Length: 353
Ligand SMILES: NC(=O)c1ccc[n+]([C@@H]2O[C@H](COP(=O)([O-])OP(=O)(O)OC[C@H]3O[C@@H](n4cnc5c(N)ncnc54)[C@H](O)[C@@H]3O)[C@@H](O)[C@H]2O)c1
Image (cartoon, rainbow, N blue to C red; front, side, top):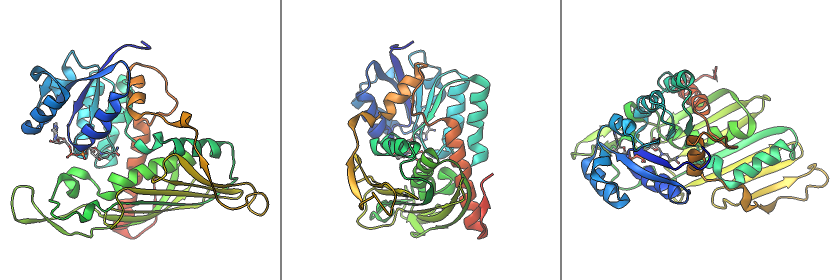
């Protein structure tokens, strides 16, 4: 099993598939992309030619790709509302599946994947990409070593300018029926996963979601339609130990292409991560009143870097891996997304369970 060649079928060959997935798989030994699927036939042809996929292995029906004998494992890279039905089909057919985040448009919809996995036992993973960053993995080790003592607070930001790009149309991600949430599920879910991965469960949330650009032109006409997903979301989360984490997420911040900052304040020090410096942590370690000596930069050893796609290939081979964002982790995050939306709608603190 250990080094078996893994032939990957990708469903949805849009932006993330051609970026992180194709790019990541290039560096993974003994695997290849054997088939692709997309309902956009122009894109299917163009991407099939780029990837050198034979015509017979280019599909418009995802079930045909999953059923194909030349596919061992499946990556689901379609809009959010399609993830559950596609992943469940792959799980039922015993094909290991790597699902893009968020897992679906609601907890009710997404949990079908976990139910199917419990029934069929097929391996699965969620693309919580930032968990694989060396600085995040190193932060986890420091936290496990209790390097900063008791957690007193967390401050997290994810900022982009992508909601303000001129002429951007009413794509699927701006419509609730296809995306579920906007920036909350698109960007915020990465932070929620990072927070639960590093610090444990989130118990309660209080949040507000805001649509800043209210209308956009439809994809195929000059008419305007309503944006129904959030452009900005701020929320406070209560951690297992009762302390709070403060999250600020927006796709309408000029000057920010993809900024993530994550500060964890402890009784004995601080750990800070900034995606603009992905191989570093800014830390103050030691009792704050004695040895800390202020913030300083730690270069994270290269050995902590891990490939998301390489991890999926190992999982598809049936091997155990150390950093594995599971379907259950994705469902946990989905529940938190639902709770934040409910909090925003009702103006109340919401218990995640
Ligand atoms: N992990 C990350 O950091 C990250 C980053 C960006 C996007 N994503 C996620 O990846 C997913 C896709 O996002 P994207 O930006 O690539 O979107 P996209 O619109 O660029 O690509 C989606 C593709 O799916 C295709 N598609 C739609 N319906 C289909 C169907 N029924 N069968 C087959 N193909 C179908 C579309 O034609 C399109 O080519 C989303 O869930 C998004 O949240 C994750």
